[in-house]
Amino acid sequence: MAFSMKDKNVIITGGSKGIGLGITTSFAREGANLIFTGRDLESGEGLAKDLQHQGLNVEFFQADVLDFNKTKELFKYAKEKLGSIDILVLNAGIYPETRIEDMEVEQWDMVHDVNLKSIFVSTKEVLPYMKDNAHGRIVIVSSITGNRVGNPGLAHYSASKGGVNGFVKTAALELAKYKITVNTVEPGNIMTPGMKNVLGEEYIKNQEATIPSGKLGTPEDIAYAIMFLASDEASYITGQTIIVDGGQILPESALDIN
Ligand code: NAP
Image (cartoon, rainbow, N blue to C red; front, side, top):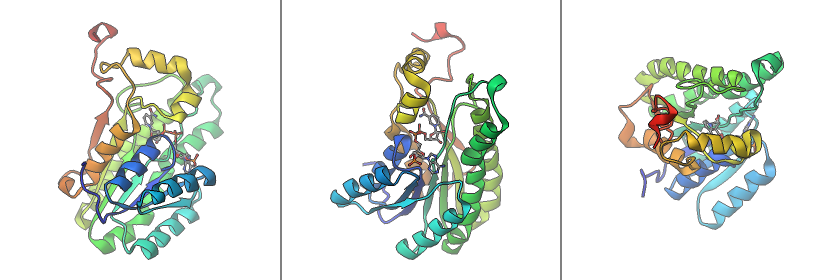
């Protein structure tokens, strides 16, 4: 049993695959009433059906985080359906690999729109509902990349995730008076389809060699940290980040990993 999510009304973006799948499944199993989003109808509806068959209160809402009208619709729908919005987990994100010398402005913009601009839009749009409730938890999936370390091919991604952590500090300040907390979780290297398909087997092998725990993390490792920050017990924590990386950022050199 993790932190109880019983009767909590939760929205998760990008909740059908990878880390999002772990978050959706973990929150649902802990008793949340949950709506998760994604672009891919088939995988979203498939997951929702699976979890509903297990007796869990889960629904899929098809939405691209770049469609800001859809974001408005999502929160309006959630309020009508669930009665309130207690917790918003902003997980949807992309990390296409391109070195700076080959990177086009359009690629830079796309990564920033998905990973950073959508975070601002979702936070702004959920605010009236959480204010009405005089309660709220916003947890954003950031990354060690851009905040603790760099990663060749991910300059646009690093800048977007650094931006997320910067955004959170001011959002936490502005929203504290409404009893809304805003925090981030920074995953290290987590085994997901995105990781496997975009970055590849060789990347994964190299990363494993740099992680003191000796393995990549799981989506559930991230879900549990998010669940803590979303719990009633974390009411006095805001504007903070939890790094979940198996110790990856700790060694001064490769010789320190044994
Ligand atoms: P993933 O396996 O590629 O899954 C990404 C999820 O986001 C999917 O559910 C996808 O669903 C959704 N998504 C992508 N673009 C979207 C959009 N425009 N609108 C709505 N949903 C969208 O990626 P992941 O590895 O799980 O990453 C999830 C988050 O963790 C990201 O924010 C990423 O930056 C962060 N992170 C991951 C790692 C890692 O090691 N995996 C490390 C640090 C941080 P659809 O395809 O259905 O849209």
